[in-house]
Length: 238
Image (cartoon, rainbow, N blue to C red; front, side, top):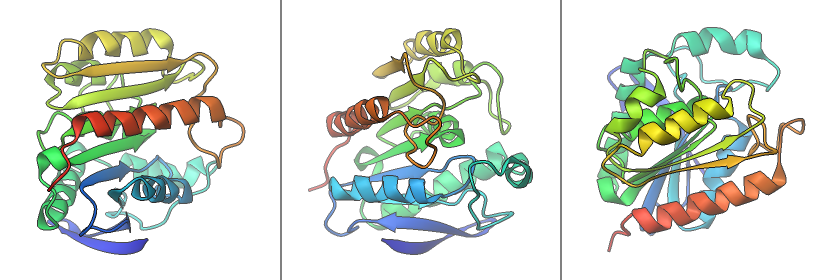
C-alpha cells in the first residue's frame, strides 16, 4: 500500500493506493464512505489489489480535512459531508482518472466502486464517460439528490458504462421501493445494468468494522458479484 498525493485545481488530494500500477492490467477507484477513507475502505483497496487490480481510494474530503472518522461520530462528519459539492466531486474524479491515465489505464481499463456516499458518487461517475464499469454499494440519494447531484433515478438513464447496484432491504434510508425505481430507471440506459437486493441486509452490510450491520453472507456475495462484473466489463491492458 502507498499513500499518494494527487494534484487537483482545488489543491492536493491524498489517496490510498494498493497494488502494482506497472504490473496490474486493470485499475479500480474505491470511493469512500461518509466517514472518509477509513480502514475499511483501505482494506477494500487491498483486497482488489490482491485480485490483480491497481486500486486507488481518493480522499474526497480533502478540501476540509484529511482525517477519517469513527462510525458513530456523525457530529464531526456532518460539516465535511455538507462541504461536498457536485463540482468538487467531478474535479476529484477527473483528477483521479487523469492520474490513472498517466499510469497507462485508459477508460476501458478502469472501474470504480463506492460505498455509502461513495455509492452515490459512483453512479454519478458512471455517467461521465471516464470509467469502463461501475459498482454501487448502498448509495443513497435515489429519489432526492445529494451533494448537488440530481436524484439517482434521474441520473441512471444517462449511464455510460455498465453499472451494478447492491442494496439491502433493511436499509431504512433506501427502502426497497426506491431500489426498484432505480432498477427501472437504470434499465433504460444504453448499457448493461443490474441491481441486487439482499433481504436480510442493512445499510453498510459490507463493512466488517460495523458489527451491528455487517452481514457476512451479503458481503461475500456482493463482493463476488463485483469482481465478476469488473472481469466481464473491464478490458485488461496488454
